Image 1: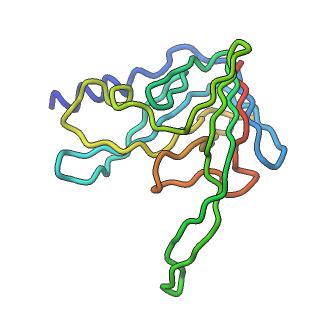
Image 2: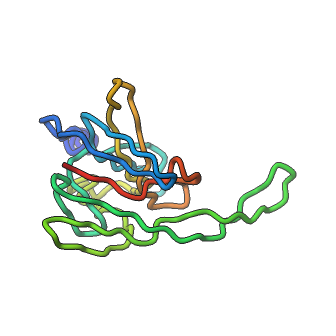
Image 3: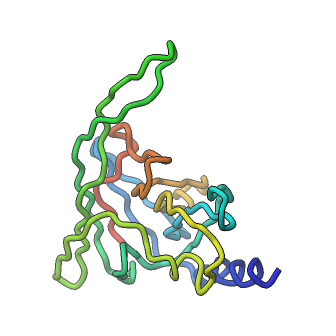
Length: 180
């Protein structure tokens, strides 16, 4: 029970104050402003000896890739893609090979300085704190919020695992995010 309450305390530490709107730029040239946004790290957790299967989120206003972090405010995030071949089972039971875009490089621009990083999952401590009795698997980094008309919107920015896909089509593939 202590394990669960400690994990919930880490996850409940969502940002307290509303952030200024972000602008999301897609590969097809469209843009969407998002209000009341958070960066949401989705991950799976499970007890030792079991596959991680419980889906959890950590909502924050900072960008975490690997062991590095940047405050989102005043940051521009640019996502570069490469095409990779992925195999999946087709409807007829045959293995189908398809080419899919996969984020390969992230440019973090802040205060005139550009950092080039790989799309790595955030460190374990960031996701679950000091909890050591859980297996975890980071899945995605999403940007969640509301459009100008009040519609809830969730946009996948990055995948950290083969268990999730982001941006299969140009109208859903994020190429840049401007954080105010």
